[in-house]
Picture 1 (cartoon, rainbow, N blue to C red):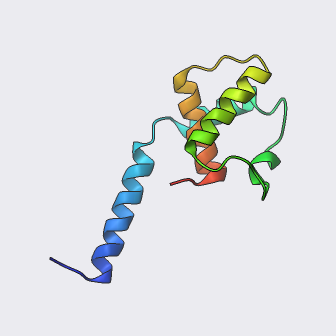
Picture 2 (spheres, rainbow, N blue to C red):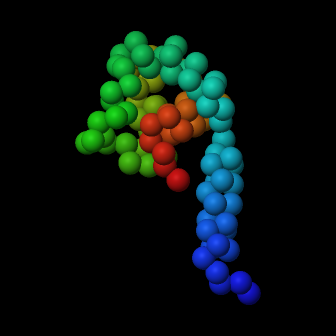
Length: 95
């Protein structure tokens, strides 16, 4: 078995790429959902705070649901997946 640094680097790149691609949702559709539903209450500074409360995918999904309830917006699972993917790719960068 190969134990070179290049082998391990290639393996890590493949795993990270696969997990990002496997995440459900469409980021470009998520951007549309964000613009239609989220920007009415806040700008993107909420995602850039150093002390942000969202720490992982579950927290992000929960926050999206909380925000939806606050503004009486009903998002379907596909829209939530799209929004999570958009916010993660744009701001959070969770693995």
